[in-house]
Length: 482
Ligand code: GLU
Image 1: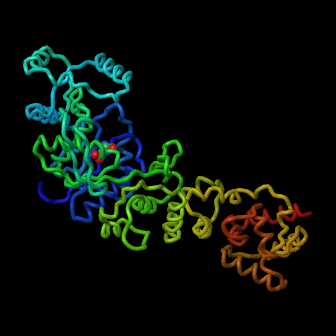
Image 2 (image 1 turned 90 degrees about the horizontal axis):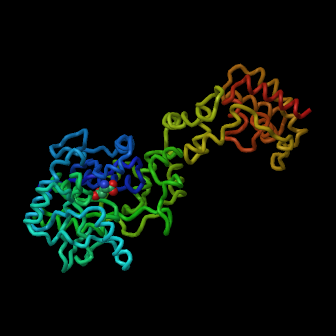
């Protein structure tokens, strides 16, 4: 190996980018970037039954959106391609044959019927299902005979029957297993496709991957992979297994709850940068108190020594909080661009989106909070005149009538319909009448929205919905007040 840091993200095209997968991608990316190394994208599609249409677009799209740009991958040859496993199909048989010659693998001709029967017997006697090793004992002549006769075969790994296999993981430390517990797993399937268990080893070696970063679900299989490395005489990569990302102590994040994938979160109105920042902290702690990091900042400070082995809890409240922080930090232009699609989805009539965004930016934690705040834009909501009663503002339907009657001609006269001008007009009148602000502005909000809570007050609403609709709504309110 060249001594250069090369990491890879190796997703299977399942049509879904689980936040745990995205975190793995992020850590592999950060490891490469922080070490001046190379980040490789490899598509692991050898399990064709799991292939989902459009899945590749989700992988590419998510990595691009989040900025986890790969240096080598299916569309970017770095001399180690192809980077899609099904395109590498031709090379695995050769390596599997090498293992057979070295005595680390063997042909297995057992058909489905025999395997089903074998498993049924194992199940009945309370054993975990495993291959019983019948074909391990075939002589070279018997094997040749079957090959000549064209009997379909798989190639299995020949596990040692005694001893132990161990390795050091950066996060989990010393891992050791009894070889007798290892199943003679399939390396190459009948159709010539490698299993993940074989392909990941061959490809990580051929692609000169120096650090294998992946989920802890692969921890227990890694000794089997290491036996393959040993048989080939290949150097081992450094292993960095990452803790699972859980909903709580017992439950995984689930597709059904719609909280498990990057796409789910974006659909709910979370910001890409906030999601990336938050998932970085699911299982990794930077030194110091800072929690808000851009990708570039993370690249500078990232170290695998900060990865913890306890399961990471995906705290939606914390993510919301962080997202709110990102929203507050956006420039008005950035917020406008992000919020506009959500406004358009909720509002049918024209309105001043700039003013709307100005008030919304302080009033939402995720963009998905926007639509529920906007029904007032299209129409005054059905309300009872008692809504004009406010103890705090010292208002009643009667005072509201008085206030709105005074306000109507003032606004009617106003030419320049901006927040500043409406504000000035209202406050001039408040001063002139020597009333409290709320005495005037509470009724204005109710009359224009029919809602107790709105983003912004009556003045902003007037600006948002425009002069014509403001006048109409004020007249309608006065009619309602008798
Ligand atoms: N294709 C595997 C997955 O999607 C990758 C495992 C690995 O990184 O080695 O889970």
